[in-house]
Image (cartoon, rainbow, N blue to C red):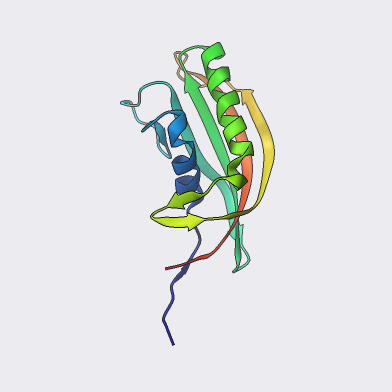
Length: 133
C-alpha cells in the first residue's frame, strides 16, 4: 500500500499563480516597501475543510497610484477571477481544479493607510479538492 500525504492547495499560492500575468512578479501574499505599482495583494481571510474539500475565502487588493488606474486593474483582475474555473492552474508543480467559485464582493474602492496608494478590494470563495503528493 502506497503512503500518501493529503494536502490542500494553498489558496493564496493558487490565486497568485493565476493572477501573475496581470502584474508579472507583483502579485504576492505580502506587500513590502519595495513593491512597485501596479501591485496585487492576495490574502486568505477565512478557510476550512471537510477532509475532502477546502473552502477558502480570498481577498484580492488591487493597488495603483491613482483611483482610475486602480479601478481599471481591479476590473481586469475581476474578469480574470470570474473565469478561474475554466483555466488550468499549477500550484507548486501540481495541477489544481476548482470545484466551486463564487464572487463574495466585486472589487470596490476602499481607502488605504498610505494616501499615495489607491486600492480596490474584491473577495472570492474558492472550493478545491485535495491533491495527492
